[in-house]
Image (cartoon, rainbow, N blue to C red):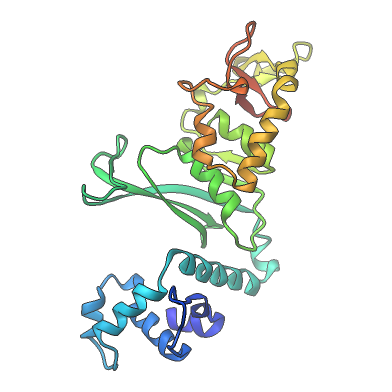
Length: 287
């Protein structure tokens, strides 16, 4: 499958050398990259000693050292994903406008700099966070520490996936959604659709005190403070723009809105209000 995918999309052309000159012809490089086969989990030595081919362990290690980099790998994946989208028949598949994101913990050696103890799953390890379109194609993946927020990883993947998919909505679990996530995804033009396990304790803000909402009464709380939104809206747009342009990391910006880090004007409560307010379209943010 890997070989056929390369013959159809030619994604191996995205693997360029980190050296200043490249003497290897593309057919030889393609053979070595496919033999190296990161997904086999066999190891270079086992691959070099298995099968009928002329490649040695030294040549395969040379290909990995000079051609297999993070940037090369991401460009190759993007090319393969875009080719998959181009071959889909919209009448059968529809338009790729939604994706789902979640994380999975993998165990790792404690000597690894990224290794941390995961409080929820237990044990030392690290976390891979995926964005998957229609449960078929992974459009973005990232390595994160166990203590970092999943909301920041969710926003990072929506903004940086670099594929041709025009994502409008993102499905997450309870750990991938919070009030800050709702606020920034709304400002960035995405719909956050969480699957909440604590849905029984969720409370909604009312647009005003004048309308009657019938059976929704038990889940409604206070009215939205529109004047507080207007006061801090320009500053929130600046933060959202920094996220979109990549001038600041998602984790660093969202950390400013945590309960223990109220250091900036949009994250400080006003004198006569609680610590939370709602965005103009119904999401909520810390102010």
